[in-house]
Length: 275
Figure 1 (cartoon, rainbow, N blue to C red):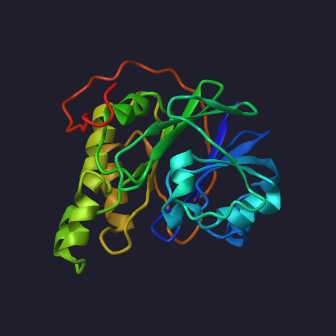
Figure 2: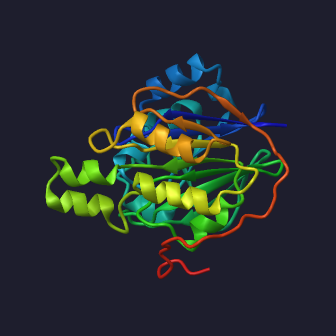
């Protein structure tokens, strides 16, 4: 049976990703309003009644601002690390917060969600892999540099939400102040188009079918540029740019036979998160 995935919004104005089966679904982050979440899901034929939990990657407002209303209205548990919760500013009133730990799978119906640490300028940031019936979906955004955790999970996935935040030339020549440029391009900032492409080209498995390019900068990237770049180098994949203004269509991900991946060198950050 297939897994359905959809980006409801992706960008610094809000992030929210849907992964589900015919029986249940989860949201990774909820950075847009409850009303917009409902509206966008309805347009795509998705039901909030199937959503059973929200998982929080980190405490930045574009990943959590929709949680209080959404979680209270639908009585959803919010999976969040204790450290992230303490720094989130979220109200505890009538919210069901449940802690998670890296590499400890959490079962939500038939979905298994595993978190792992990542490089980003947040207090305790995590990426996620959602598994169902041997189908693996990776949510890999807000990452400053690839680490061994990311590489390991990239090679397991059938579809990924992969950050391609900025074009290096556009960022260098743009109007952002120097300190902000350094933050974005630093090891705890965001992945550039070329960093994301190198990661994908080096470690994509044969069974990877869909790449949803995510968290594009409005100022320092171009949807047309990044889509062309990735599609040219990955003609066998369905490459989709996740919008900061509207939801994507719903994609059905199925399991297909895999073959070993030939590894090539890639610049990897390993000091913080050794295997």
